[in-house]
Image 1 (cartoon, helix red, strand yellow):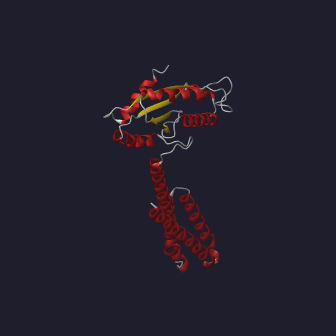
Image 2 (cartoon, helix red, strand yellow; image 1 turned 90 degrees about the vertical axis):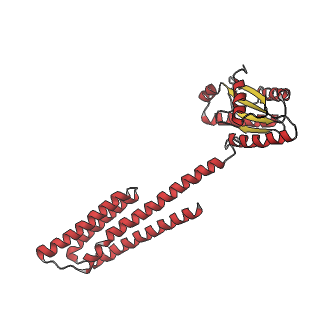
Image 3 (cartoon, one colour; image 1 turned 45 degrees about the vertical axis):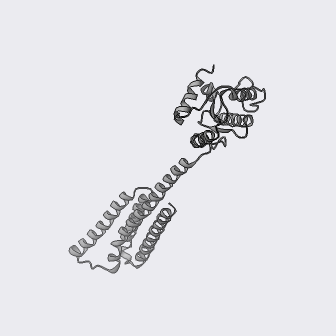
Length: 284
């Protein structure tokens, strides 16, 4: 990926060098042009600048067409002068022919380099997102990390004959809270709830932020009866008067749905999670 971006940057540098070299050549040609023809040369330079500007603004194909028209018009104009009036061709007339085409080529190269870098950067961002295992807002591991850890913990608990359970904590009335709170306040609510849950569970248990709605999952090395005190501690902490101080108004409170299930050998991990989520419906 780094090599591709380096090559794309090199292409851009070469393109810009060719463009600047062409502009410098145009300036030299203008100084060499006969005084009675300098207006025509100046008009040609302006046309090249305008076409190049269009190209750098993201229309390289249009730039190439315009540069082709400029070069063709110049050749036609000079040939007409030769055959109609016998006007001799001078060195600058010849030098002006390839300049628009070189500028068009430099613009195409520049846009190619930019497009290549952008496409590679988009691909890189996608790859990074696929590898990210931490929820940026709460600092907890995300759903992808939960599945990874669940698979490891299931094998560990199976070897050591330990139970493993999954508990899901979900905000009740999430849509209503999201509608009443600003985006910043809602993010603060999610962060505070994540802190409460982390402070409540044991150090060996793992907590995950599994969506952007304020839902959390906890992997516990315990059975169903062992989840009861965990549930009670979470509800107790959330129910404290100052639990969401500076986050919620006094007339607002946080209610949770909590459900859990012990893993049974042979269950698919996604099926296991869906089974726990289905239990949330009955937590009224």
